[in-house]
Length: 239
Image (cartoon, rainbow, N blue to C red; front, top):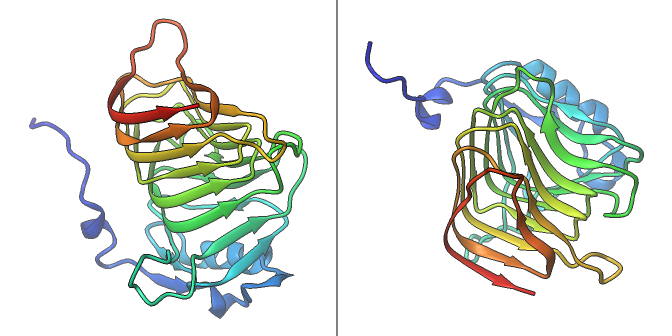
């Protein structure tokens, strides 16, 4: 009868199955197509698993990846003083309306650079729910660059984004028909490859709040739908 609370992620993954994408044949050399190998790792791990990528590697993908319930994709970022050689990059060479990562509920993306084919390439999207049952997402230290739309959150009932970054996207983040979206220390640079300015955040949720960060070089920084309320705390804007 008490209030429902979500379990802490550390508790969820305490006994998770860890899968290294190298064991399924992923090279990460920036040349070979790693799509099948990485999807095989996601399939092998299944619900509640942790999929690990090497730091400093560039994985080439030519089609979508689909995650599982409570699955965590974890790379590495080049934090100052960390000694890492560079971030983990997932480079999608796709066209049409392809979605880079189609996620199921409570997928977590952490320490990844999700890079698309270019902001003018058709209607490609970095991440998007797999279907209407995919209603929760956690994103931490992930960048979405060079997409028509960096991320779409549609019919999400719980979403937490910590230090997300969006660069060179026509639309950085699109939110529709969603609830309880919180974003911490966002960074958006809307300057596109042709030096025009894109849209930062299109649409909002109820409630929707941004705590800190910057939204720069955007034609429209935050463009909510009619009747929706957005709360911004210590967010820097610059055109």
